[in-house]
Image: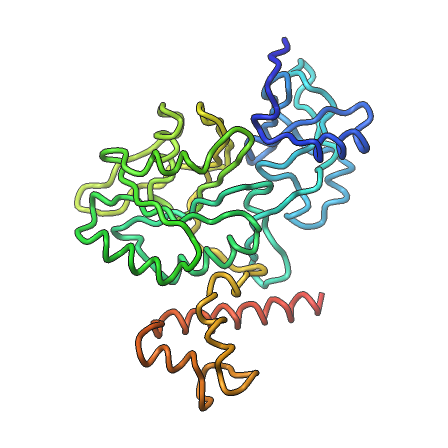
Length: 333
């Protein structure tokens, strides 16, 4: 039975329609709403269906980033849920952007999500607070082309929120920061400002930081399973096991994701994630200054006068080394 889903609310644009018309004779436009171990869920104008990749698409896909991900636009063989099993995904339409992380060895990439407008980078203000992790997340987020927003959760468990926010500001130049608390729904209104009809946001962060709780607050109902903090423990319990897109009643869509235990960089944008260091580098005495032991280094001088922390510079060096390793690995394959 047709439901006449408004696909523009899912981000459907003239560019997508044009590509689908050029490639999809006899096929139907859909957006991937969830990834499962053995397949996908997709949304068409007639509703949500189960789906699997075609044999041809599976044969042509030799790397993880060549398979569909949430929230890809795809072409499927039917728009209705029928009695003949899952719909079949025949094509993946061009991604306007993607959030990618590296895999072990640095020769392949995993796409966490595609066609994203905003990335909510979540970090709790209790056990999970880690500036170096935020810098790593930002390097990946800026590379995607989407807008990163730092979301600090569990403010009710932090005794000095202003001090923590000030620290994040130094580690995240150019990124908006939103402080939230599930206890009194602080910050929910600020998060809604980034969502509107046709816009898609993804929540990324470690396990237990409260991503699902925030999403339930935005949806106005308990759609995502959550678990409270264990007794005598400041850490929330991880519940999300798959990537899933959910529609926000006031407009827009959000993606919940499993917690990230480790996030390897793929092709990070260090120029934005470390814009303060990159700008200072222009004042170094030597153009090829490595900011280690060279005389006249403006970056090392900034560390000495504490305008940049030693930990931030060390993390910058670490990510640069990782990037060079990835680049070498890719040229050898």
